[in-house]
Length: 184
Length: 166
Image 1 (tube, rainbow over the protein chains, first blue to last red):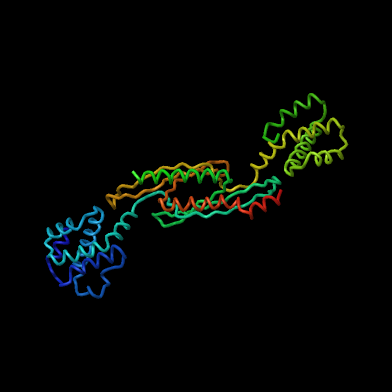
Image 2 (image 1 turned 120 degrees about the vertical axis):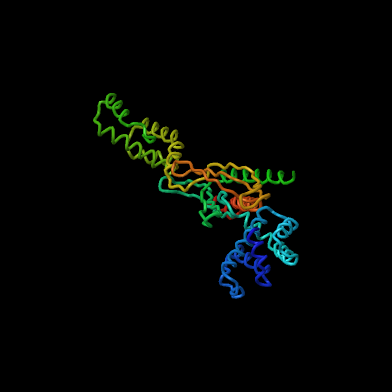
């Protein structure tokens, strides 16, 4: 909040409040860089950087704490921002809040995430060791996503019909427990 | 022999009892092993087995005990041969637990339900385990897909193939 107050107090440009949000929005959400923005070329790059860092910190911290609008307003008032800018900031914040939460929620380590499954059914007839084997066999591939690296180390395995029944039974148990847990 | 019991033990046993050469016994055992594994591999019928050994010119009594030997051990030999077949990693078991993520460094006050699973697979004689996670919606999708897979085996197409193969 320190930088924010300092920068805002300087009141260099008329549209500074909006610029701040725009910067933070761009940098935090879409990750492009502010110094190249032609609308901001008249502003001292150092101030611009401070301003950007302050806005980004403010937005991320508010998002992280799940701060409500009144808390954000109070904080900005402490930083001596005028009413109009605070309102503008809060309106923009409200608009982007959900996207911000999704972004913040996705940061951090978690086990490999299953996103889908594909399967193939085969009927085994014979192999070089054994004739007349005659049994169905499933090949299951779990599509997996790694949240950290974005890689997709899929998990494949074969199973008999009984094993697949076992697997499905267990997944159903989990789904039932999940349903019960959400009703509590 | 098949299960890797030391052959030398039997060899000495037979050597002493039968008073014949090492080579003779070795050939005898190898012949017996070949006869039993090949017959079991092809799953030949009682009649076919008898026809096959009749040409070898043994006594009726020996033929009878060979047949008995085949019938008694066929199931086990097929099990062992089945283990030798090329295999993909295969399903062993699954453990699961329900989690709700409540907070993280980057976001406080979350409510994010998840199913954490430990999937045990058999891979080249070893057992491996992997920890995976999924969300409730995907879990239901997985169940639906895999139930379809199970149901497929009961469809006319599959049943016809299975019937005609036997």
